[in-house]
Amino acid sequence: MDGWITLARGFCCEKRLLAAAADESRQNERPICYAGRNFLQVVHPREKSLGLPRYTAVPMKLLVTGAAGFIGSATAQRLLDRGDEVVGLDNLNEYYDVTLKHARLARLQAQPAFRFVHADLADNKAVAALFAQEQFERVVHLGAQAGVRYSLKDPHSYIQSNIVGMLNVLEGCRHNAIAHLVYASSSSVYGASSKLPYSVHEPASHPVSLYAATKRANELMAHSYSSIFRLPTTGLRFFTVYGPWGRPDMALFLFTRAILEGRPIDVFNHGHHKRDFTYIDDIVEGVVRVLDRVAQPHPRWDSANPDPAYSPAPYRLYNIGSNRPIELLRYIEVLENLLGRKAEKIMLPMQPGDVADTFADVRELHEDTGYRPMTPIEVGVRNFVDWFREYYREG
Image 1 (cartoon, one colour):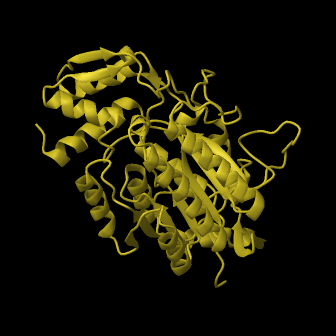
Image 2 (cartoon, rainbow, N blue to C red; image 1 turned 90 degrees about the horizontal axis):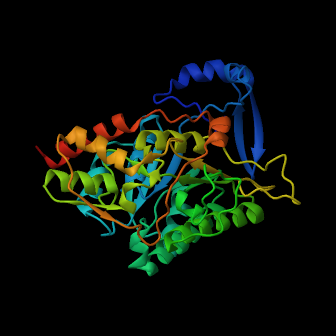
Image 3 (cartoon, rainbow, N blue to C red; image 1 turned 90 degrees about the vertical axis):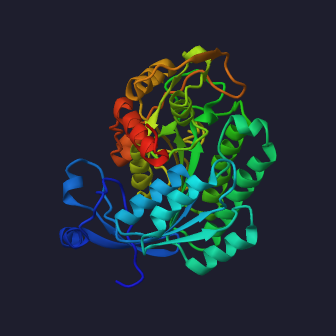
């Protein structure tokens, strides 16, 4: 069926046996039309037995924004591994070491199904032209100006990247019949709330940093486009992502470098706050599962008791975390053991814009996609240390 694509839902394998999957699913397929485009819906008997509908993916042409970034490059790699065609967009800004961004890109550019576009999301004409030219099927929007603390220094960059950039992506999706937009939000949106675990069903109306405010604004912008234009959108609230190829401004990176160089580390809130540290492979697994499950209007929407997590429009929000908060001092202890060195700690109060604890309730993501984070910090931090020593040729 030329021109047909398949709506996909979770449980995707890292390497997909497309021919076998097609044989298995052919007896259960039926054509459907959604948002003005044609799809082939395939429900596997194996998934029927679990009570969870399943959609089997075929290769798609995808846009991944922030493709030179930490999560973006890892997501692009996973999509390439399973046979998708990926166009990666990034502006390669100098927020942190551009050499690291180029190194991530080099791994992707070695693969024929990947193409890189150097452009700024805030450039309306460039983004509109890219969408019109490429005719993507789905979009994973991970490009943004990151960092809670940096938003205190350069707030204007957050408006350009995170607000204007998001608007341009939404417009590109709207005008080019994109079947599903998955975009990055953040656990920072929970802000002043101390009600743990954080649930997508609770309001997120008190951000304590401009970064968090832009991410919450992204969720509201997405809902308006889902409501008015019936654009399926899914927002993912990421919880403290770490792992190989990570960002140099993140705690694990900063601590590792300082300890190896014999310098003290700054430990905010005296190390007593907890974070739902989530390994990069677990994050990417969740992103891909959500990408393959196109957001739908919720059948139990109640306008008298509106739920922030879903809508009568094709819109969803999910937390994506490990569901295992770890105290910062324990995180540092694991790192010290792996490096074989003790850190000299400078104990400091809580930073402006920070929150005391984070803890992700991921039940909805598990129920809808089968997402189950598997990586303990002892394994994830070891993988990071091994990568760091190799990449920087450290001791």
